[in-house]
Image (tube, rainbow, N blue to C red; front, side, top):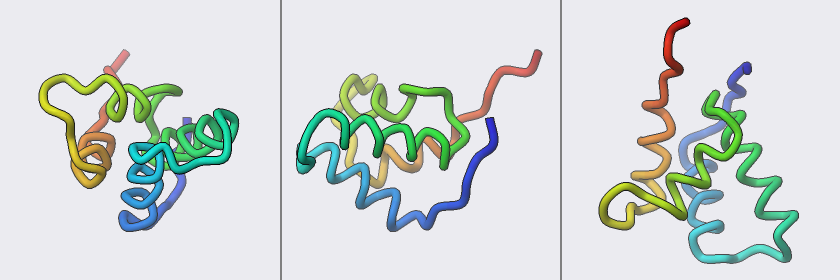
Length: 76
């Protein structure tokens, strides 16, 4: 999976939008989450897990972005 470039501020705004449930429908949310996964080079569903099922206290949008940026796949 190839990561795409996205400004951190844009990513934080997209994560905040998801956290606020500020989307027209589930399809829009799914599309935004997939864009974020690709932008960070994460597997599908990784960012949504960070947002909706965090390990520990509920993170801020900026903390979700920071955690996603730290993602590193396991070496084969």
